[in-house]
Image (cartoon, rainbow, N blue to C red; front, side, top):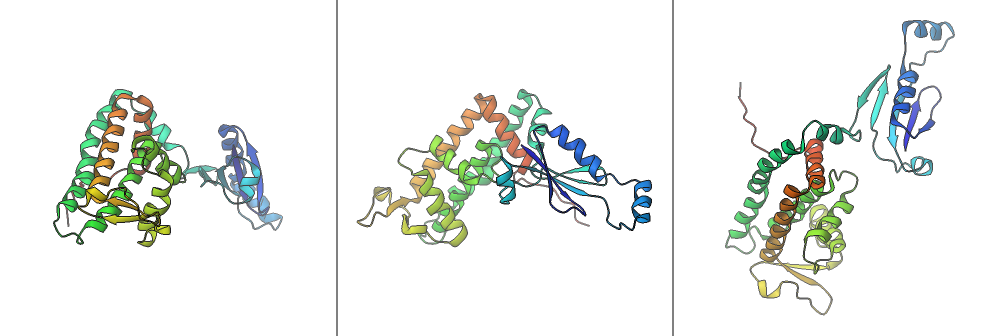
Amino acid sequence: MYFALVMSDTIGEIQGFDDEAELDEFAIERTSFTTEEQAERKAKGNTYGPSVVFALIADNLDQLQENNYKRPVAIYLRGERYDCVKRKPTKKCASLLTDAQKLTWFKKFRPQFDEWVEAPTQRMIAVVDKEALAMPAFIWLACAIDWLAGFWYGGSQGNVKQAYVGFISAYFPPKYDAIELYDSLRNGLVHSYTIKNKKYGLTHHEPENHFRSNENGTVVLNLEDLFQDWRLAKNAYFDAVENDPELLEKAFNQYCLEGFLNHIPVNYL
């Protein structure tokens, strides 16, 4: 459902709409500010300017009032609409290309992803020194799951956990606890450089200990094994994208929304 949050001399006015077109018409009308209107307001001693309208998406009004709504889909000012991050540009972007064109894009994107994500992981793992790059490689893999999950989900902003857990559940071996990987490994390493609740113990070059646990229930993750499972999941997902139009559209939507790192030539002055 769409809500229009009107900010003006009447602070906090909220209108609800089932249809985005109705919201659009309402918001443009409320934010229009002609010369005649300006003169009329001034004559009445009303110095307030035109309304500003934030177009929001929420499941219900209670959720909106609790400030748990998603970001604005648009902001309306002086009778014009300015699209924001949660507008649906991904759908619009995807609709500009045919399925064949999206597939052509993906076949170029896949080796690009491998170059920028998989290859650096292999180089880190190849370092003989056990302590030098093992931890950065674990952090890199935790983030690499995030990147894949975003493409699989089709735009994970605001739904990072659902995307992360969903991707692991869909493509990783069932021995992995998707929620624990998200909460303990991913959030622990990325946000605090630790393992939350001591769920996992991390090691390197010890394949015989991968997924062994101690008396406290701590599960050992061996870097090389985690990388291989990630690599198999990545390839299985990418293979599926090439044969599933729905997955292809989601991947392209994420690319439209977020982009992806690549070489950009720069000419310096």
